[in-house]
Amino acid sequence: MSARASSQGAGKRARATRSYMAIIVIGGHSRSVGKTSVVAGLIAAMPAHNWTAFKITQYGHGICSRSSRFLVAGATRAWWVRTEQGRLAEAMPTILRRLRESENAILESNSLLKFLRPDLYITVLDPATADFKKSAQEFLDRADAVIVHEAAQIVWQGISLKPVAGRLVFYIHPPEYVTPEITQFVKSKLSYFPPMGIGNFENFG
View 1 (cartoon, rainbow, N blue to C red):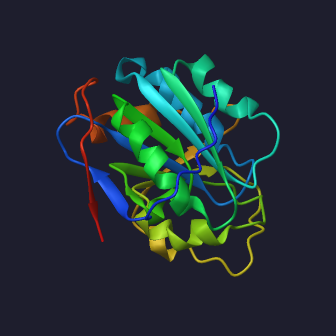
View 2 (view 1 turned 90 degrees about the vertical axis):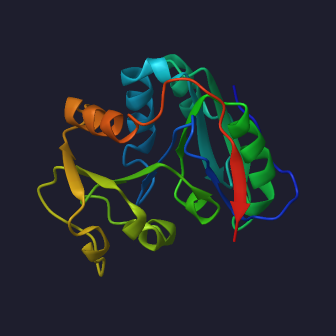
């Protein structure tokens, strides 16, 4: 299931009130570092949360088979949101409406952090992939934990990881992207939230 979100509207950040809904955002420094695999892995590991999953892309083309992986993993619903570069704010009213309809939500995106305050943000890093998105650098200090590919060498140039100094780091060896330790960490962070409920939202500047 996919959807193009293009509603007009202001792009203020929003957060769920801490009553029922859990919102997780999974980001990463580049394409093909395993963000989708982490989202799918968490959905499969925590089925009682009845996840609604979102994949946010800019300049998306064709059919997003990756968002269908979320449904295969056990998501209740999956949305593919495509926007032009720099126009994610226009899609936020639609995204927030879909979030309000969800019990719990997990979203794949970095740029979404400009408009949404999740309960948990995890970033995926692969030292063997040279590209490092500006959006990933911008929100690196917002990460609650870091998932890192074990790599023989680091090919990043001019990238500082000081913003995540002291954060919990989980090392992975694909094709395993979500380890029992990662699952336990997420469960412990979201233990405040029962696996059902209706999220309430409020805007703030």
